[in-house]
Length: 78
Image 1 (cartoon, rainbow, N blue to C red):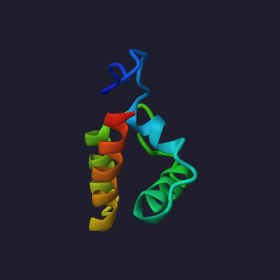
Image 2 (cartoon, rainbow, N blue to C red):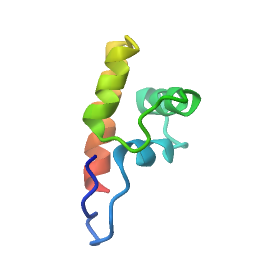
Image 3 (tube, rainbow, N blue to C red):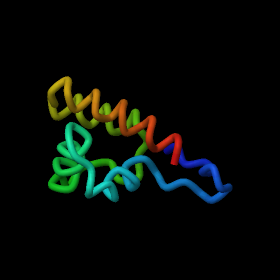
Image 4 (cartoon, rainbow, N blue to C red):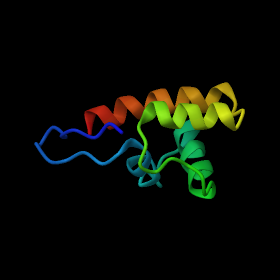
């Protein structure tokens, strides 16, 4: 699990938990968020690699992996 500190020195939430909070996102990231919210096995406490592994196990489309990449950049800047 990758958390660390955000740019304000506050503890950063786990990537999975942060992603589930992105309810107003549109496009591929919004689709990823919607799918994650509907998936009881989504790794809420996991990092980006945990989410990628889960998507791989679920045989998700390549677009979902690209959405994780985009979301990871946003999460790192959070």
